[in-house]
Image 1: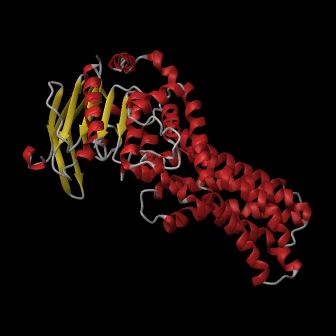
Image 2 (image 1 turned 180 degrees about the vertical axis):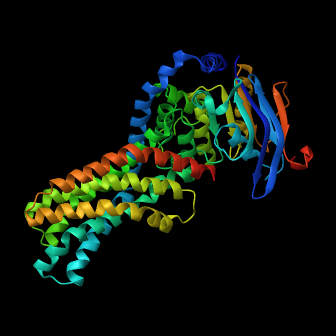
Image 3 (image 1 turned 45 degrees about the horizontal axis):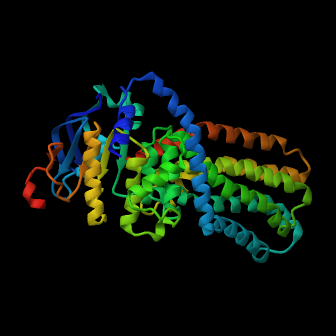
Length: 215
Length: 251
């Protein structure tokens, strides 16, 4: 498995406050990396840097051993990023939302796969309801349907468990571990306690580094 | 599901330099562009108010002028080209602020930036939808309002044509400003300040074309310059929009 994302000497400053410094991150295929730390310690910022969205940092990023700026296009073709905002259009139905994401990722349009992906996140029967009329959890599920719809090796998920019910959380946890088992890798931030697994690795962030503080 | 995933992960995790995969994005670009056009058109048509707002503004402004100034046909005819063009320009400017705002608020914009497709092309698709639902209707509506300003019938086609050409440039140039200010809570005023100076050449030659048509001179030269301005903005603006979006998301 050639998947390998590395960060060297990563440092980031926000409003004269150092979020992290001298941070080395190694992400290989087959693991779930949980970035943890108290609120405001820079988890989202780190995820945005690792997914190539922020240029406002010092240090170096490597994708499969090559500098990120040289292989950005190849990197993006292997990346699935889900941010704080689910990226779901309220005026479009779940199915229409997925049509756009499927096309954007360069996949062939396939109605069966979209229906399958929606059924997979328990949205069967809501395919044609405008997303604005669905609950926050259901909107989040539309975004999560993309995990299945557009297969990508590297998942970067910022608080994916937000607004998801208990069954959904268990299913999503299983999906993350399945993905790692299949050779993909997941970088995730969450305040939800993930079940212990040999595939799970913790990445504490923040100067205080008190893992118990958030539990 | 796990099996399917294994397969797909293997497929996706081919070495980054794998040349065989390089064919995919170029063929995928057409699909992505068509889907973006379709999505934005459907969204805009579902929120009809946003499409109607600039048109209603245009109609209201032009209706007020004969009442406020004088119903004298000769006077109105003299100022009509400028009035129509200024009102259409402001109507187009009003609608610009929402061009990327919705996508920024719900997170679609960061997904657009992370798509493995050239951002310049994708943003061009968004601008095309903006022009189709703002600039083009304004151009088609202008002759109707021209009647109110006693514009001679011979100049209707030139008026529509100049507005259609000019508003495309306005959409393209304005989108750079909209992209730059999308991250700001109240970017509307700043957007106008940024964009208006760049609109002036389009306004001069657009109004000039209609003026020339009324005088009976050929409007060809003016239209040619409008076309040249459109060609230049079509070639350059997408890169500006893409860069501006990156800056906005970075901030």
